[in-house]
Amino acid sequence: MSENQNHRGRREAPGNTFPLVLWWRQHRAWVAGLNRKGKLRYRLFQALVILSILIIAVTLFLRSWIQLPEVPDPPGMNLTPGGSTSQLQPGQTGDVSYEGAELPDVAKSGRKPGYYTFLLVGKDTTSGLTDTMMLVTYDTQGKKINAISLLRDTMVNTSGKSGGQKRLNVVYNRNRGDKKLSEKERIENGMTALKKEVSRLTGIYPDFYVMVEWEAIGRLVDAVDGVEFEVPFDMNYDDPYQDLHIHQKKGLRVLDGRDAMEVIRFRKNNDGSHSLGDVGRTEIQRDFLTAVLKKCLTPEILLKLPTLVDIFMDNVDTDLAVGNILAFAQLAIGMDVENGVKFVPMPCYGVSYGGASLVCVQEKELLALLNDGINPYLDEIKSSDLQLMYKKSGGGFGVTNGTLADPAVANPPAPKPAEPDEPDEPDEDPDATTDPGTTTDPGTTTDPGSSANPGATDPGTSTDPGASTNPGTDPGTTTSPGDIGTIDPGDIFPDPSPDIQGGEIEDTTQAAA
Image 1 (cartoon, one colour):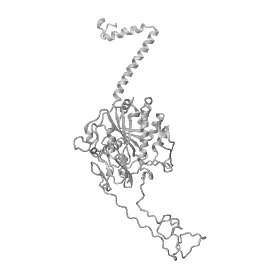
Image 2 (cartoon, rainbow, N blue to C red):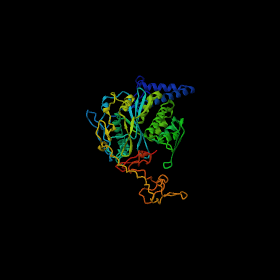
Image 3 (spheres, helix red, strand yellow):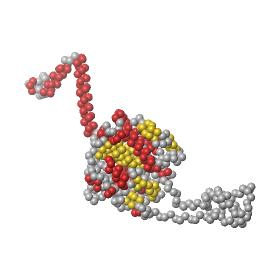
Image 4 (spheres, helix red, strand yellow):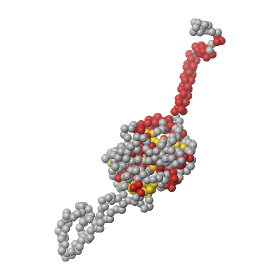
């Protein structure tokens, strides 16, 4: 069949040939006429064209994949004036509930352009408690990151009866829901409850959450070739029961992953010095996370992005897509990490309830910090947007802008029983019988006509077997059965089991180091 003959056997005039087909025939004829060197250059040109097309296609795909997320509406929150939020998500159970708060009025004023908020959570792998929590605001247009640390011992308005159940760090675990649910559903339930509680404390409902296992911090630090951090003092602590050994020297150093894990887990030294408590430990963790963030925002870390994404996917639970995270990272390029990143502590004062050491938030100081770069809304956050627990001057506790979920906390603590009088001094009776439990130096002559020296014998050393005082106890000291001083149970008792759902454990103690 000739070139000008179609598939039905009819001949076509040369002028009727499709232009693209005609061009292709001429192009093939031109290539066939090239010499070997010309053909090599032509093949190289073809490869470059194909590569360019692939790059354009990948770029277009990444642009559609790497993009900022839409700010979600807070679930269960009614945006109409006077509306209230729903209770826990369907499927949630447990003896302690965290009722949803009414959406703060400030949230109805609208959003500042380019502002995103995140709840960054560090979860203890043993207990499942969220021992480190930070509310982070990212201003993508101004290239600034502001964050406030939320203390785990913050007292919250909950129906939990014991002091341990009133801590902020138990909200997530107690609201995960039935164990029959999938792990993803349980995480969403717990984080929804925690977001609502954070909105009551700050007036800000976090847009997204990022929950990281603390063990991942060590891998992350090693992946970025260490992080420069000034260890504030010598740290020396050993706990053979947890196989935990912390030995870090004071000073500015480049910490590797193992060093980093020791620093962020430190509570106190073996000799009792530098006992940090919740506030001090959180401050060190906050400063270290700031150092990690600054290191991750340096240009050379972009080359390690595949490794960081791998660590992130293995150790982090979040409601953000990987493309969203990469979009945020892309916008952070060029950020002034020294002046554009600021982490502040939550202002608070210490209280005690039910034997647990807690803290209450200082309202005025908190409002000043929130409205200085953390607030993503158009209007300023006001006192009326917060629901804070506070200690009343006459004893007991109240809550601002709300009703107590546990009315019992409003009552002042019951007065301690009166301590019994100390025993009288021994009578100066020359005929008194010598205490058979008292050791007398045989070389000492005792004048029967003189009064015995009550200070010669330590009553706490030798005790009359017939006395009601326990051996080894000074009878001059009275101990109240319920009075053990101000002791943080987290310094003595380990964390409860990972799942403390459905009232399996009466109280939740602080996490051990």
